[in-house]
Length: 211
Image (cartoon, rainbow, N blue to C red; front, side, top):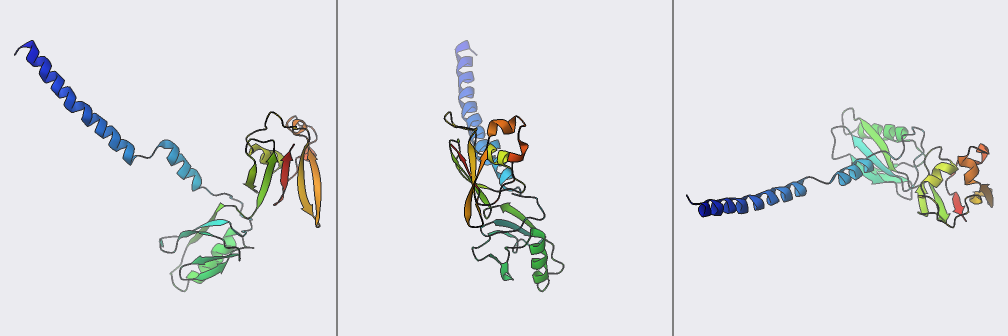
């Protein structure tokens, strides 16, 4: 076999192998989701709150799981009238109850149709309790009010201040007894550990303004 023939055979084999490797790579990319997407899916499935005393409110989203009963298990939003809709049970009152109380109520209702139902309820989105961040922040907008959330914790959601922010004169607007109350907050003092009493617990509807 001449050197010319050997080179021609080697070139032909390479031309066959390269498309095959490219196709395998493409197939792997199509069947395996990116790590970022997997992480996002995992984060989305986590509970918005693990507080057993959390009171469900309108527009919250609930993950309702009935063990070994996939046809009954589902993710449902709480309607503005405070109710959710479930197979077999129809409309069920949800607002004003904790997840454990609602699970007990659903369990009682399902006992008529299912033997020893095991119901688990997770609040996956808190939409009924919100605070608002406005002004010279990177990410202004509405945010869920988590249990025991403080002034500093709320500001951490904003992604930092703009170069024009006056972090010494931040203030909170709150409705109390039908009147608007203005509460000032000095961010630099707070992170330095001074005047800790100003790092108050927030209430639903509070608006934080960074001038």
